[in-house]
Length: 233
Length: 387
Image (cartoon, rainbow over all chains, first blue to last red):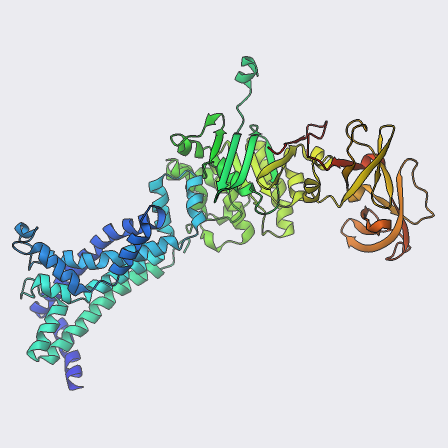
């Protein structure tokens, strides 16, 4: 229990004391995970909306793939991205392995199926006649999709929360494609693993607390956005 | 139609030709021909699942028929033209289906989809909200409205796009009776003032009879009859149409002879004389009589009956109060039951079990051939034969 208390005190000291290394790690974690979440939105929302609204042969197979992807083990994604970015791999020439960009790619791959799957559920959960009503009011296909997404905004924000939660907390892919290089690709999760390995439990607890605070702040911001009263909610 | 007439007459708001819709290999809609003139209101009644809503979806260009043509304001709907033509039609569903935005944004949505600027769209939408008496709700969230308010907003949203054709699927369903009584005439007035053609689907014949210029009866995916409401009501083309319109007495009978212009019909124990809409000769034996309850009189046996009327002696089987008086069910010999709607409550002698004479004039009973529904003569009503 002492480690836990010491860890809490240490976490407060690290944050308030303005420990430069810790703040760099926090900012990198935030940058990588937020960018990855943003990319997963750009890819996942259209994929989810398309799967919800378009009927085509083999749709069930694709939906099955997306649902499987929602539970994708980060380690497997790490292996795949590593293979792609490896010096002799297909994208090796880009020299991205062990960079924050590689971590962002891996985390986007983890979050995209989650966002797509939850978008699919959100849009399918709408009254199917809303779509006909929009079309009958003269909406173009693009206007129809935009208004349907607006109707589904509450579950869509939940999708963003789930996607961000999955990537800010994952360690398997981050450590594999980032390499946990001090000052370059070290993020809160990989740093925590390192400190535990070194036996520095106090520091590990402190970093975990910081990670929790960070995850909570971002999720809280999204929740406030979701739950705020606005016309029509 | 001559060229001169073409130039002055606007094209029909809706024209269907040979429209067939199948679902799972079954024909759910088969309309060889249907025209709704510009500015006309057509009401369609039919039992649930008869195809009324499918017909609306086809007319709204939301469901492509498996065969046949749809024309909106004279233009043929094709894959290429349907989106532009859809913008000349507005559809109001049984549920208001408002979007989770403010009331004004809802009412303005159709105009916004057409590229009208926000300020102009909201100005025009607000005018319609005010016409439907819900202008004060402008900034309220649309999902928090009462059923009647939501319905009015949905109607304002449809009128705001100034459609050539307004399609209404049970627009008064789930409203309480006073709201219905209020909204029906309001809607009719707005349709008349704007000259908007409308197709109104309902399952309540009373509502349909009150609203439409013409009345269509949809049975099993087909237009069983269409014409002016009074004509359809007076001369239903089939027993099923008569029952659907709420005609209380639909009685199977047998033609046993003629008396001048009148048919003599045996109802199974009682014989009545009825005036057919066409010459009395040439009727087959099987016939169904449709007699409105309000055209049947009922009185104690000692009271006089007008000359020439059919007088049928029986006993009172049931007596029910209605807002307009009393409905007597008279049991006749042979198990036939005749319903009479009496304007004023008769004296206490006509209680259940009391002897009674039910009477109606020959022209009050409309005979329907059992062999096949066919054109029911004059008055502009038209029965569409099964193909």
